[in-house]
Length: 149
Image 1 (tube, rainbow, N blue to C red):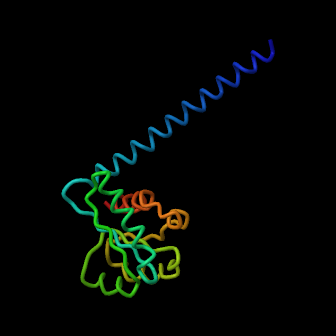
Image 2: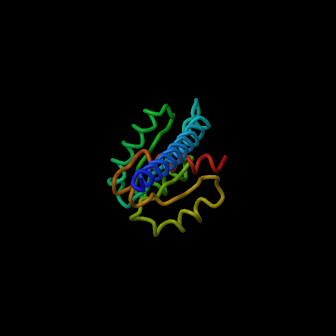
Image 3: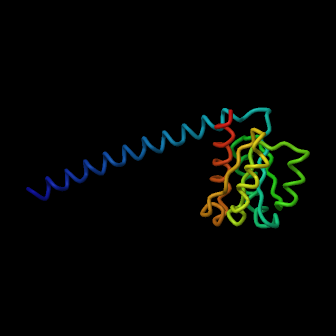
């Protein structure tokens, strides 16, 4: 009798957890969809990835570009070295600048350089960078762009 009661109790608790998990998952998906809808359309989002030589971010750039295309987001993702980025930013505009974890020490330099602009800046999460998770890095970039609007 007690075993049946415990089984029913744990089954009910598991169902509650599953429902909460589904609700949270639905909420996260709906937030993600709203972010995508707010930046989709004709306006192209320009994302600049900066690393020490520009090579390590090129694979991440491709994965981000594919993720954007799969989701119908009009995005141009570029990857370059910090030296190239310095020259590029003097003549071109980007919507967000993301630094590779290996050049996080340059964040203050770029904060100073971008101080008079509306360009958001962040360091790419080390786990996402290491796993080359283009979708998560794209999500982070889109959140920064949306926060600035």
